[in-house]
Length: 301
Image 1 (spheres, rainbow, N blue to C red):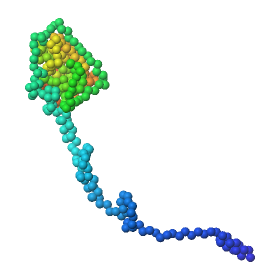
Image 2 (image 1 turned 90 degrees about the horizontal axis):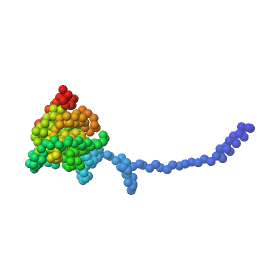
Image 3 (image 1 turned 30 degrees about the horizontal axis):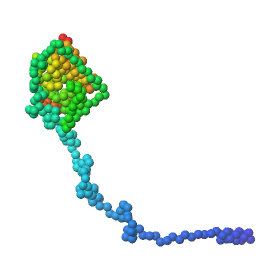
């Protein structure tokens, strides 16, 4: 009897529970032929990609009429050749020299000819030797300018400033412009200047001292000198001007300043090739070695 009542209650409970049935509609067929008025991104379904055609479109010459940077797609560039071309265009020591001095141009011959009265340049023992020193910051870095730029200086006898990239060979020149020998000063060289009208005996005396002291030197005439002091020795940031050559004064200047370049330290000389040699009369000879291990050593004997 009890089981009967339990069964009746269970049936009543089940009938009171609300049952919900969800009816699903028919599935749509995912077909590309199905009508769609919108846009597909990036391509319609089941689109066949033509890999070859896609690659051709990237390098289509007609698709871009502007300038490619640094070069058009697919073009191989010879980096070494580009560097060589840039260097030759900037300064190769052979072309476009007339911006400073061209030894083959007769119009530039005034740089090494005496055009004045030689008597005004005779040695005068009453004229004192003058030492001029310029303060050049240790961090100062001059600019190496290509031959498409003009280089000018604020001083009558420049001892620091911009120069040409190609370093000149050390030695005696028919004429070497300051745009060249300033590079030598930055490398710790000593530059000897003499006016073309200066007394030849004094020129020879100063030349012999310099050539016997160190390999790292430049000798060139210059119109920048005055009749009062037609001879000069230059170092980086320093200038010694004279009318009469005094051996001790000259040797001391060379010893104190030789091999001192940009940083004021006696750095090892590293000469790259090629070197500028336009107008070179005779190349410098080694005194001790290329690094000038001993400066004016013969004076200590």
